[in-house]
Amino acid sequence: MNNIGIGIDIGTQNAKVVCLKKKEGSYSLMGCGSIPYAQEPNKLKTFLQRAQAGSGDIRINIDTPSTRIRRLDVPRMTEEEIPEAVRWASKDFLDDDIDEYAFRFTKIHKEDIDTHDKLSLVLYAIKNTDIQKQYDLVEKLGLSRPSVIEPNASALANAVLLSNKITNADHFILVDIGFAVTLFTVITKHGLLFSRPIPSSGDKTLTEQIARDLNTTPSNALKIKEAYLSEGNFFLEPAKQNILKNTVNHFYSRLAVEIQRSLDGYMLVFAKRKVNALHLCGGGAYYYNLTEYLTQTLGLTTSRFNPFKNIDLGLMPSEQVNKKACIFAVACGLAQD
Image (tube, rainbow, N blue to C red; front, side, top):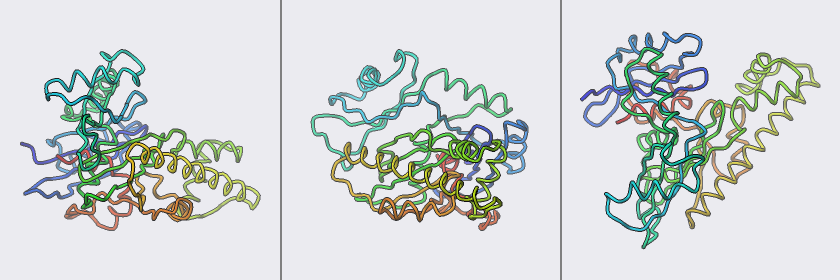
């Protein structure tokens, strides 16, 4: 069995890559990086060769509009009967015929919810055509066929379970603020329990809002956003500074509202659960003053999530790795067995 796992989080423009070597139940980091594969397709293959992970086991993510992750309660039945029951029970929330989808499910542990006469599951449904597109993309990039294609939410759960010791009473709330969408997830010691995508709340949305409000080009809006949201720096005249502040505050406010709605939805489905803390990952985790804003607005201690917490960084520069650790959460979860 190959003891090198390569997690590739394929985004719109960049691919975040984490290469982990497993030995005696622990992991060491062989390499990580954000690769602009869209502009330079060969760069991803070159990176893996330099990390000495060219023969590793490739696992990739999938995050498409067709992805559905739902809690599903079905009558108790034999293991052999569950797959077919899941397929038919999912008809109510799928856009097309069930034959167009691939299905997977995990059982919800009775410590997380006990429905007595029912079997509670977390269901994953993804269109077969979207899965094939991911295979085709990997082939186009000159990489070997991946052994695993994992939804982002499931990969995040893997990363959390490796980096944190979760007790029976804990519910780890992780919000992944990505380029196109924000993903709200809840993880327990048994794995993923709840997932909800938050549309129009990713980095792309904020950049578009800045371009519109400041009447500037997308490329210039990106520069303005990065200068302000990284360290709170400005290079605008006072009038436009105020416009930018209002735009960012509006985005933060809407994000906070959507996170609260997600928390409410989670509490409704899984009653009597207390939430004390919130964790952020993805590029948006580094937005200037966002953790402080969410702590104050939601009343939940908010911090950045480090997926490398329990991983031996080896010869990798720890300061450099930890500085951008949040963007590698999905890739880190993929790279694990």
